[in-house]
Length: 377
Length: 164
Image 1 (cartoon, one colour):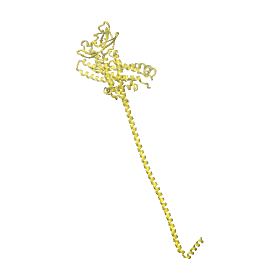
Image 2 (cartoon, rainbow over the protein chains, first blue to last red):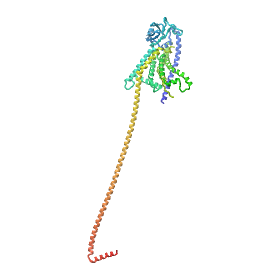
Image 3 (cartoon, each protein chain N blue to C red):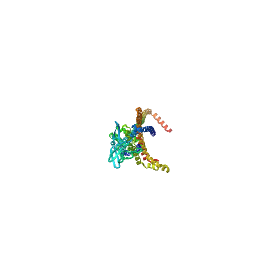
Image 4 (cartoon, one colour):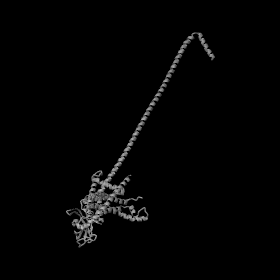
């Protein structure tokens, strides 16, 4: 009876997520088509009247940047400069991003140690010697400059560190509360944190990995859950909206990499046997299944990467697209519709922040669970 | 295309940041929090078990009390019964003894009466005999005052003897 209720609950939850995702997908499709069309339409006019370009605006907000742009005031951008760290053929080069003077078209040249750099579409290029301006091929790729290894503290890295500070503040102070209380009762922030921690333990780690082995993986699961969740939430706060950390594929791929490595290293004999020599099926089938299983091993973290990246980025693009409608139609009359719709999406997004963090954690736990599962035939 | 190509720099910083976050949180947050939660849960479990045990003990105690009470009651019953029996026996014994005593006394009394009677009879007999002899003496004295009567008697006696 208990398991039935649990299954039902999970079923309803899954249905709920599926409905949400379908809704999001449909909306995303509709608006992205609309915006792309308008975007192209306005792009054609761009040369003449410098009109509003929704696609550029959205991409600018969704992608990473070398400076933390807050607001344009009196036609001058106000932004926090961030350090640029480059590895060129001659070694390490560092300078502040303010040296580009907010230029993103590749016209301002920064000269360091005899090397000259320009920033074009949020990428830093090293100009070849003797060249003063970038030249482009037909697809608008610079032809006379090369990309150095870029380890800059970008907007996303900066926001990621802010989120780390917030996480540490919350959880270390929560842990302190337990030390202070003499009977291990949660107090203050701990009483908010504890249900979440217990939720991850009882609903994610124990069902997916099992009572015996879950303990070892709890720190990873908890850290990854809260890291993703907090970054998702930060992505929704308008002033910080410029930083789309969990909607950046580099961020999601890094976390999926952790899951992948943990899965590989905690895989037991049983797990590897299921990948390379599937027990219980005839030999031709074993040979047939082996490449599928090996591909599956890599598809799992890739699906984790893309799911989180696509969901968060899609949400941002929808909200920004809805807002762009006001500027595309150049009419205040459309504003209530835009604001209403984006408010609706924003509320869904708030739910999605938690759901995506939860899904990433559940699937990570599931992959670890299959890797550590004991033989049972 | 930029959107779906992971930038090396951000991957590098993400990995480093997450690794540090993981290690710091593991040591300073998850360990104390999970430890405290575990500790409390085992505490609650133990307390519940102890309460359960106490309840069981209580029940045992209650059952024991009941049993002891029942035993005491039964013992009291038995004692009362014994006492009653003893009383009855004593009473019946006493009665019997009294009966015996009475019978004996009656017998003795009867014997005594008999003896008395007998001795009285004997005395009476001797009295009667002596009286008879006295009377007989007086009679004989009167009867045998003359010689004829003496001879007549001797005659009759002799005739009796002859007949035998």
